[in-house]
Image (cartoon, rainbow, N blue to C red):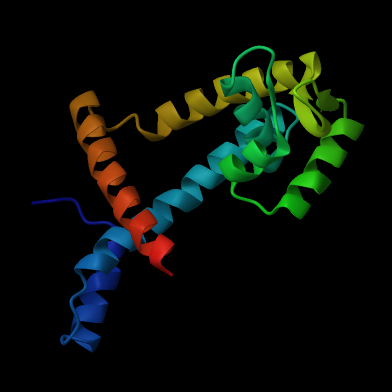
Length: 169
């Protein structure tokens, strides 16, 4: 017999209450919502233990992944973190005050600005990434590697489908 989870109970109740509905999407998205809540908690803890907020991690992660000299335009930061330009300006200001990033004049465009990660920013984002990797490994601990890879493939397909739908809105 397969192991039951909380979503199975919820689906059973909805099936009784609304037998006219196709609840297959609810089986997927309700589980994703529940998993996301646990993952979000683990991420917040990993970031806090490293002295960062989740949004600081997001910005620093973009810079870190870009490779040396760890700098990007605010436009790239906006695109990759999916926030507005006004929000990003505020975040850069706050991170600059904390010594995590600095603004530089773009050498290719004297009117442009680049955001560069400081050594302190790199130290904190590296620590946070290590803690995040460890926390997420613990969350996936009960799933064999082959199943993880299959799950990642299926989630990629779902993400592409959702992205296409969201782009049409």
